[in-house]
Length: 318
Length: 318
Image (tube, rainbow over all chains, first blue to last red; front, side, top):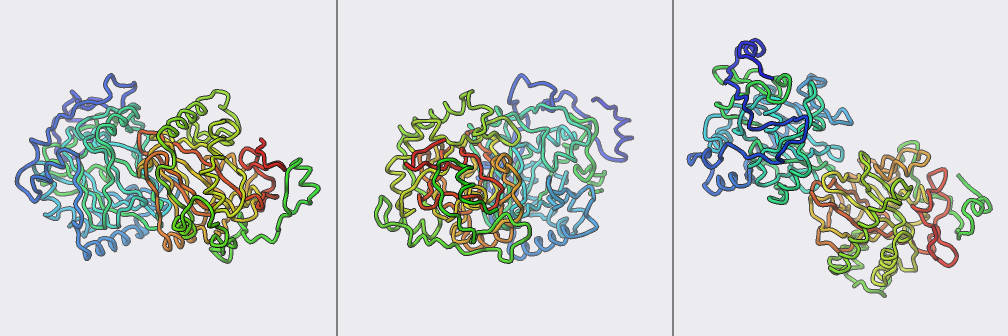
């Protein structure tokens, strides 16, 4: 798996790389069951989270304890309408059909996700860098951030499928080479969350443990995993232990609410059994000193549209 | 499709048959989309429900309006423990593996349902004929009942799949030859219902409309449909209209609660995302003057373990 610096530069062109720490504290995609079901998290959120920023000490403490923070009414009605329109416009663009950054449902041609959305849309790019959002994220990360991934998700009424339990960090570490747990996801729902339309469910406190997963990464695994994840899903016994500790929560609320969650918080969702679609916009912020290196558990990195590697000016490129 | 009386007697032996009404008010399994999405229900619950019985006038009115009634603490703690034990005993009996009445998960060998459970277990037979249960059911049916179907369902933690929206009556009419909407299901949960373990969801008021479904019944459809139903699922537009009218409800509560629902109430469920299994016992009561005839939308009736045809003494046979 070790790849020399010169080889990496050749692979990825003129991008910034940190030296990969090949003593991997977060081994996954293993060929055999690991000796320990749960490994400790090395990055302390208590030390990381800054006192300065828009979030109150209580909100920061909640995020540190649970691995997520839910805020209702983050966006106002005008903004929600604007972004819903923009989402509809993007999802109906014929030019995006059949493109690699367009992910369809496992059993149909319906669009499920559109990636790199801050490249595809000025409105979503502006939202991604909105100081209210970036301020919260950089306070929780305790440092400056860049966008590792962005997407819009659309779960059509009746046919939108769910996701099994998983940690995003597990995939970003194994397949994108993200070294440490210094990334945060922001999900803004553009439709009301109800118990019936497949809202995000999280396991509070699960971010404090890394769950090594069994099964080596197949080539171009993302083509399958973005539809239905099969590799990088935690063993049942580990899930059971973490749910016994922390339970399950599914924050529900009106459109415009913001969910910030740690990159390692286990989450999943159920299918959409309601007639209305469920849609949200999703940005992943990585701390600038946590740049992705070579993948820790895959033969080659995933494409840029899934894992952006910024240039020296931190400008988004694609 | 018409089969003469003599031929029917030959097919099913010494069982009671009413004359089938081949002017079918509830056509389904159609080869082309029907002219109307929703057809009216012909059986009036207001006229059917009796004043005499254990249910209060308010409970009867709720059932009439919603098509279901949820009662917490129907079973006490001792009974719950007894039936849970009995369920575990039945599900682990090697003699039941591979039998036709044993239904496994679509993707695994895990047992999902065990049918004809009042034949397999004295304890469940006693429960099926418990006067508290039968009293409620016969009050709502306005007449004496027999058991059309019985089963236990087991939805294992993490891997138990959901069911898409459907009306049971649609299947019992099309595949079992149940003439009218004079049947009621009783579901008793033996584990707590939570929003995360795939509880039953219902569309209040949907029992007032019959939704014709498109798609002819394949031979031995039950082998597929008991794992994942593909035929007899309502068109999306009809579902949308009924959910717009009545919404969705998922009664949640502690183990031992009873859900009574009309045979035509649309219902479904989500997968079990919790570590704990979800189990329930399920009895279907049909009014004695509503005996099943030839199927209305299939070439031949389903096997006895799915649709019991009682003898002249109303004794269960299998």
